Length: 290
Image (cartoon, rainbow, N blue to C red; front, side):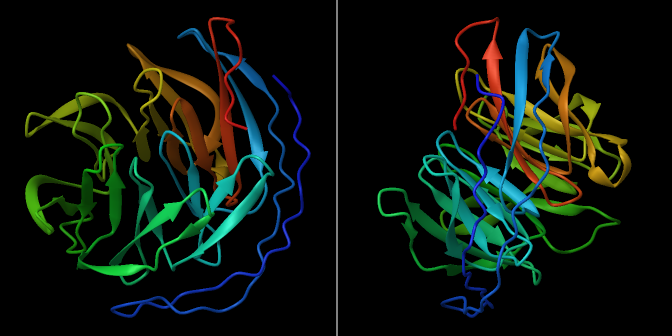
């Protein structure tokens, strides 16, 4: 596995969007590359090795499905990453939180807690126009098969009610939390509450799960990889990263937001720097998306 990347300084002109009921309008601002470099390999007791590689640009939130990764930059615009040339592709939008399903349908919430969605077309590296959806949300999560969950925007003592998208409507399903992710295993959804407790939804019921977290994500790769950023702060950079394999195993990396690109953790940290993790399993041929 290569331990270095040749990073390209992105010189992109972005369109910024302000929400209307139909579209999101634009302005121009540059995105700066990150000069951070994490090249460390950590042998994980679970039997994995992970190498983190810095990506150019910046990210205040991240999303991924089994094939592609997406980010919200500091200018609030949405981008997809082209691993073939190491560049971010501008997709517009104005976002605070982001998620994506297995069909590349991107869901975002903005600073007004409004919800929008758009579809990314990899062959043309373009996306459909952003369409405003009903409801409001403080966080949002989608899985590979297209299930979408949100946390509403009515504050319930520092937590928010959970809703699921069904029949083109948001249905309250019980539970409250601060971060949510859709599941790609027996868990229908994952929830983190204001105390950093973790819950998973199985057969319509919330079950407490071991550990504490600030953010959580589950990928659908060679197996369902569940990752968190933990609850112990590591300065302003964020929190330790853990992967679950019968027990929580701490791996290399510090972040504030996390997504999973198949098997691979995709994180952003307190400095808005983004990293993708490459995975080796039991000294087998390295697997790396880029």
